[in-house]
Image (tube, rainbow, N blue to C red; front, side, top):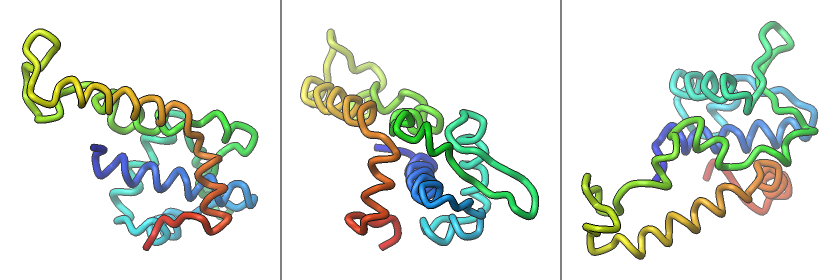
Amino acid sequence: MFSKACEYGIRAAIYIADQSLLNKRVTLKDLAKAINSPEAYTSKILQQLSRNHIIISEKGAMGGFLMDKQKLHKVMLSNIVCALDGDNVYKGCGLGLKHCNEKAPCPLHHQFKEVQKQLKKMLETTSIKSLAIRLEGGVSFLNK
């Protein structure tokens, strides 16, 4: 459903949020290891998240990646998905047909539209902070 970049981006944001709640910055190397992703690929994803003001990138010896703790509750999964994949996850045919629509639906059209609607609601109402808290509490994991 999501691109590989988006999957890594969501994992990265959750990990950075978790570390930010602990007042820690994250290095690219540590992040890539924590979320089991290639460093070079992760770097490009982080650039995109930084350009979209989702994460903060600080250079220098004391630099790294972080998120503003005061704004974590405002960063929703939809922000990350849109930054990396656009809004395609909310559009398109469940069977990949180019001309599927209300007037000429594929066999899955109506059921898939409902799934997309529910997915959009979940992405727009789930904050990165809530996911980071689950990670910190040991309720969920990023690298298993």
